[in-house]
Length: 232
Image (tube, rainbow, N blue to C red; front, side, top):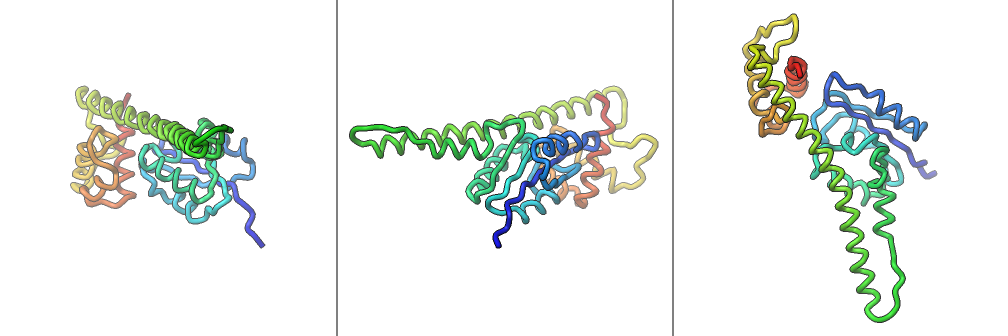
């Protein structure tokens, strides 16, 4: 007996101050039967625990619902590559706030045909369909690029907040009511502040983890502490 298609919902937040509730409510309102997967306090990349569990379960004919495109990925290159991969596998993607890039809309563009008569009809149709595909692809890429621009702006604001806090004589990165007691945590936070993209640095989360020589859990704990110490 064939497996019945499943509707998955995916929600994600990247900082402790954000809440998953709004995303889940929006998904459940549109798709009450959606099976929800959720990640908290993650980076911008695709190596998220719940997301990977969902990817192992999803099959052709299933649907994945996101509240918005940035919940799938804020990295334009990664996001579009994953979009194309899932589309080719026959998995439907739904973005509640960007319905113009749902896979159903993309599929309509790819399947569009214009009736023509005369010579070289086949070549003309091929050219038109290639144009429609490029147009649809551009719309999807733009959506992911917009999401990436938003996180880049957040990084800039965070970096500015760090500089303001330092100019005011505040010690950035120390939890309220606590002191940093280990040289390892102090050094790790210095590396995060200097190199992590969230603080205006040039490196991705996984690269900073390796540079600092700390675990993933420690890295995101230290990064949250740093972010929470900044007063905008």
